[in-house]
Length: 433
Ligand SMILES: *Cc1c(COP(=O)(O)O)cnc(C)c1O
Image 1: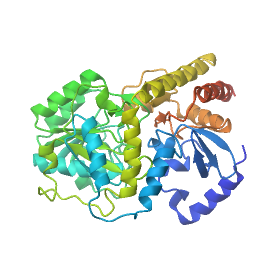
Image 2: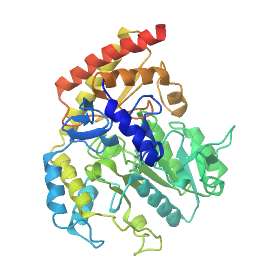
Image 3: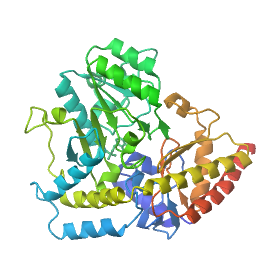
Image 4: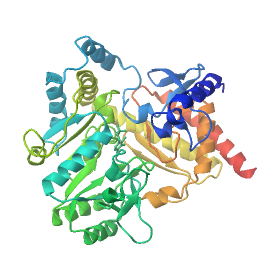
């Protein structure tokens, strides 16, 4: 594969942008090599500046459930943009998108739009703290909720449940309010509640997609709900990724457990920058200007972004069978990868939730972050590179989730599986060498 132009572009970008990228994972550090610079997308494909074509299973990390350049979304964006890009004043589009989401999500009575998932989560945490008048939060190791200070936290050493900063620049004073529990391990949550009587909320990805794809067990979520109620803490489902991805109503189409607050992003912007947080009216009405909890945004509810999101959400709502088809394709893809691994006797596990798929080079089932960390990242890196050479664009880290879009055909799935057989052979050869 010729990546000459991308290599040159990457070197030049590094002179002006730290690491050449505006979000670290894009630099391909965990898989090595040069990230292809993307020139354009079309349906299921992306094309880099050297003219290579790839089947895209990243889809801008989740938003593009209809693939690239969906005609309905494109038209909504163009028509809206012609009427002005932003007003910083209420528009009908915001209410329309809010209505659609409130209609679909039982746990959302009111919603507010922001510009990213990070902002949605940051605002939801402030609201939970303001509502409960408590300061501490519980999060799970391996769950990602954006890069706000309170959440850039890792488990402290030993048995300590309070977190320490996972990045320089995050004050310890802040992270000491964040307790870290183990995913799918209710005892670890109980320990956190014992360590602090000041817990405002528990935040969880009910289908974790940022340590690879690791769904929460139903019994675990039920116990989590009960623990939150006992301790008068709010339960926040971070569905920035899983919302409109796992099912039409995200994880909430799978679990019976109801959160108090939900954060959304990615698909609800149809490819434009959007985040949102919503929940019970009683809690949401604590927000300024109704209540005392301050939260604001110059470009929040931006009309172009709302129009793109509205086009995407309406199309999904009107065609719910989309999820059946996406899930079938995801399952077929993972069966194929599994068979390809088996042919080379490579330990491999897979997971599917709706249009989301994940796999680990691992011989054990992955239920939490420790399990995920035990995966063979070296094998993944070799596999990733070999797939890229075959024109298959997968997420460039073993701790990410893959996505099927409606633009991906059954033929493309079969083509991808064929590529996986070749790539598994490359992994196997590298191991023997
Ligand atoms: C992507 C993601 C975020 C952060 O969203 P940004 O738009 O990147 O700020 C938060 N939570 C989850 C679960 C995500 O997948």
